[in-house]
Image (cartoon, rainbow, N blue to C red):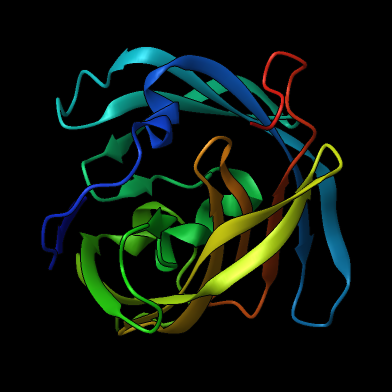
Length: 214
């Protein structure tokens, strides 16, 4: 998988370097099919390890764990001076998220500003294809837009979360995504409308006691 993006350089608070430390993030996960029927409702775990991903020294190692599989699925997160970009869960019923924008925020961007990230991947390696005409590597082009901050409640405190949405186009169709990010707790909500007309919603559960809001 390869990706490219257009970006300038700016800075945001170093507390946003959250994914560089060894921690665990527990998410409530829900999937609805194209008929609105709930087909998955459980928790999944994002684990960070405080060290670089061995396959790409630009990324920090992370792992996703699921209730339906005993393995940890390792991948990476990019933490730069102006943005956070992370691989979403992409195993089992979450594999379709290869066709969505990956969670990403640019905290210093102004409201309404846009960024473009293109990921090139072979979708057949991730999920069943509806069209036999699409083979090999395709480009998933995501246009991210900064929205007005959204208020979220964390441990009884109201906080302004950074809000980005994204539209992704490819030969397979169109998908949409929404991301809420808190500089102390990372991605607190992720919502995906997939190529298969599913809705996948991830919400960060109550943080560990040593991570009280500041």
